[in-house]
Image (cartoon, rainbow, N blue to C red; front, side, top):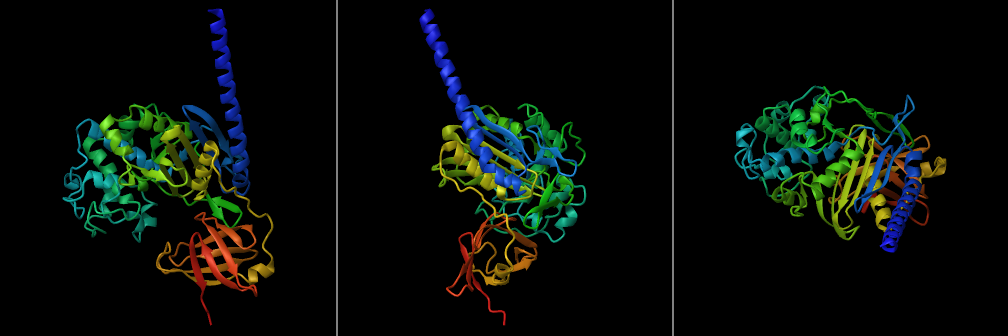
Length: 455
């Protein structure tokens, strides 16, 4: 019996040593991978990796407050932008679990002044197939962000406006208004402000003690990351101040990476929801719903669930792959789409799959390159902005892309000869030249723009 016990203890020790070695190896690989992002001011925040029930990496990078030189920690709070939709969805589904609302109930009883209220269902809102006009696209949206809002005042902004398509027929884009309306439904069904209802329905039962809805009155008891945005190719500046109540339901949640991991465990492997309701979330058709993108991942060749988000001064990414019970969380207090690449690449590290490291150039562009690179480029009808003409412009020794939609300019980070990363949207950009060195076309992601003759 003693021999068996000794063998068992030895086996446990070997297993523990293997887990420790794997954790150390992944931590070193992630640190090495992420260092260029941190050094170039394109990531600042927390990364958490959990696999098969074990936390393999949980580490903070960069500064929560750059002016005061306060570093991020693993307990720093972050606004998580569109990842907030998962919690709004959970609050609604808890009401479904209790029989207080049905997924196929029309929204007429909650928002009778919304066009199509008799045809739009709760399910349409949750799967972003409602056809509601997007509050974020309204011409006065910047003013909305500067004033305290409630779900009622946000939904009132779209009352009477025409639908973009027949409810339930398709997904067009992220429906911020749909999640404002879901927050309103939660309020009307519970009789509580959305922040209080989310706490009672979701956060408290799951012991998400660091998670809350920012309704402009919350005062966290721990450090909150300050928000920043890119300035030029290499610098940062404080992000514009907004009132987060203006994003109630779609981007108003605050949490830590640890709480987010606890939420993912409870949703996918726990009892956050009743089995039938949970299966609605896990169903991969339609692809988008309940705060998740869902389905077979070409990159990972596995079923995967993920969500990303950006809001002034913050960016977030969460991923869950059931096959390995792999969770990857990347929260950043820099407004940049780099966080999505960071999260996917870290997942590849954890799975032993290939990825492309980020190696920004450290030297300013030469005057010759600057002089021979500027101009206008015409893209086609399949581009992100249909038939857009992008201007490649210079400011000192840096290149920028000017978009036609009034969204400002995107700094271009050099990563090789005539190769760049769009710092705003984190897409690859390449200048292609003919044999004489003149620009023949501009590649943006998988699209190509032809030079426009400006004479």
